[in-house]
Length: 295
Image 1 (tube, helix red, strand yellow):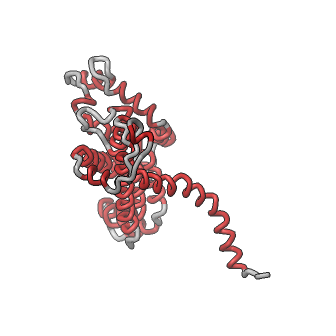
Image 2 (cartoon, helix red, strand yellow; image 1 turned 90 degrees about the horizontal axis):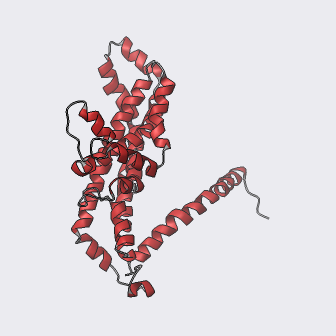
Image 3 (cartoon, rainbow, N blue to C red; image 1 turned 120 degrees about the vertical axis):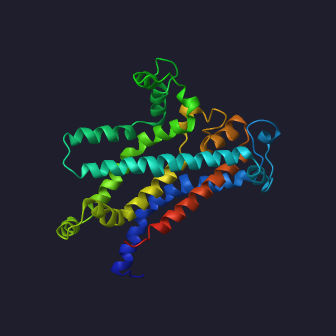
């Protein structure tokens, strides 16, 4: 009988504790990814002859994909949506909220609850809530507000479709940004700030030369998580606009849905999903490499 050392037993225990998580990842992440890739190499469909028996087509779906202007439009819309809402909107407002909470704020608990509430609401509910906000005519909530300033009623989801969904997703994601960045700010030793003030540093110098550099690991971690999760959003945008008007808000998730379940082309839809997964992995690799930056 082989006797294990204490370190070997401890490592074995760690592996056994990780087994359930690894099995779940294999079942719900790895297997679906490989299945999507295998499906992308076929002409599988929900209707027609291909629905009765699909056949292997190789890389034909990918050739069609890269020649489809609608795919490139959806990729461009997705990148604008991610940069506008996650990288810029949520980060700036979340960082501002986190900095505000570092100071004595009256009714801080109420302020926290107001910011965190949107993140607790399901995507579909948020979508229907903002549909009433953006409703056209004089009875829309937003139109009622702008009417006080003499602005004519607008059809917000038709006049400013992409900007509208960016605003909604920004509103929904501020809480996560604030919580993560607040934890990063709390990890900065207070002694550094006190020493800087003793040396005569101004608030502006402290922010740019101490706070921001020491927050870089947390900022890159937030950027990584928010970019990947925003890239995969579907329900919120589908509820608000269905990808319209004229494909102006057709992000990759909606394009995959339309090709798979509206045009009934499962094989082609799977090829778009594979490309979307590859783009997400490349973005993740960039952020993981950036996370190794030394402060």
